Image 1 (cartoon, rainbow, N blue to C red):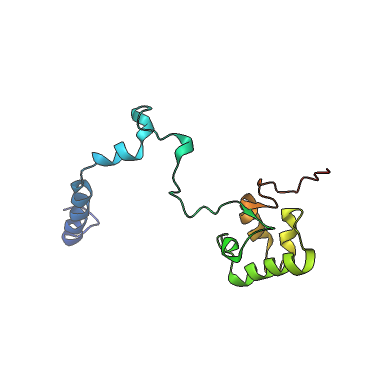
Image 2: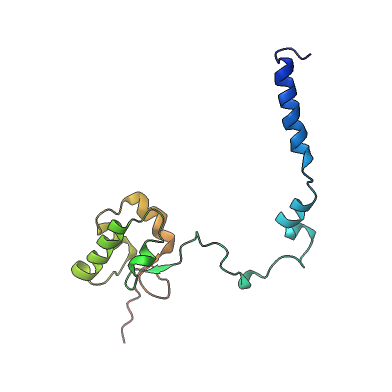
Length: 133
């Protein structure tokens, strides 16, 4: 036998080792690394369907709905409500995404997590451009 491992234990381990090699490893690498084989399998960067719903969109704080705010990681209904209340009742318009920190429940950690997704206009700017006519 093997020192330090009883016969029974050795048999169990053998089972797992055996099972590991049981699955054919031929089909996986070709799927996970399409770029390795050449250009023909790589999808065009612009025609990506929304395959990652986990990634929140850029949200215009001045037009955001509660549903949109809830897409932000860690945003609760309560926090979403306080952001909307801040906008509608207190400041009336966000001119800089930093102002979201004034909403109750928004912590620095949340702000840092949300920052890539926040904007104050539909062009995705994080500060409103002062467009004088």
